[in-house]
Length: 436
Image (cartoon, rainbow, N blue to C red; front, side, top):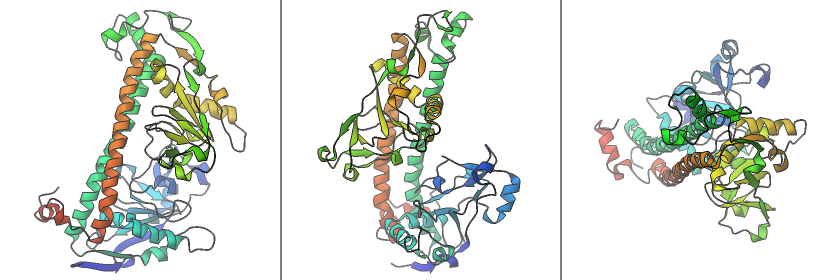
């Protein structure tokens, strides 16, 4: 490739190194403070805040040699997540890394950090790193020495490096925007649920002769004008079994078509109802459970992991996942929010506490006590929840398409098989300073 050059990382980086776990381990972590980035935070292409730990100034000073800076590339170097790569978002800083994560800081006059990130994510180089990590004695690991010897082939022109990265990052930015939009949509649904079914805001507003802040005048009329036994009059006390059922149907592997989507616990994110990843059923080697789109998938193994999602597709799942379905369409919204709430997770965790491999069950969850509103109010909330769920599913579908485009372009761009100038003249515009 003309004007491309191969060099070792050690020759174009100002830092390559990993950190340590502060004395005291996880018992010393704080609710807030300076971020301590661990392997679970490093996903391919994006950073996850799930399980992000925090340390104080004293602990951070002990890790002063692994201060994370903006644009640093982070690489997992041990364990099952070895070779995962991303960059740290600015809002996570200040931060340190532990011993399972390496900081790779490029000399930005020689190698674009964004270009390096995508180079390491190229499937060919990813396979190389995994093979290298597996060559050790007992545990997958990449050492500092290995990373320093990585050979990178890149355009000599920093402008071209940045233009290549810009095309790929524009796709990742849209993917990230959709993810953040889904999180916002979920938060809005939870806020409305709390206002209507926990705080009873429309009822209280009516009693104070004020307009409701959470319901339109038409919907506010559906709420009673007084309380009885601590809840809006006409509402009842019940349990989750009154609004939902366990719809799990077991299926044997020989009945499963290979194109069927498969969801395992490893695919379900923590504290996030948007299911964005799943596998193929050819990986299913034992009895599984059927589910349909809009079913709620509840991870019953170690419930404290808080793995609860709405299914965007039909498929099969692990038997360690409960398949929950509302009894009626007007119960959809309450079913979704109740089963994915912190309260139900804490309840399930208490009941299974003490077990070596804690599992909750439908019979336990079904007994959780709730307040049941009138059908009219339930219908209005479910209409809102369905619109939220549909938008989330559309965003997931769009992200799948964007990921396919990115994954198709990445190896071709990063290897020079497609030049930036071939993609709508982006490179030429960049060289003229027209791209920002």
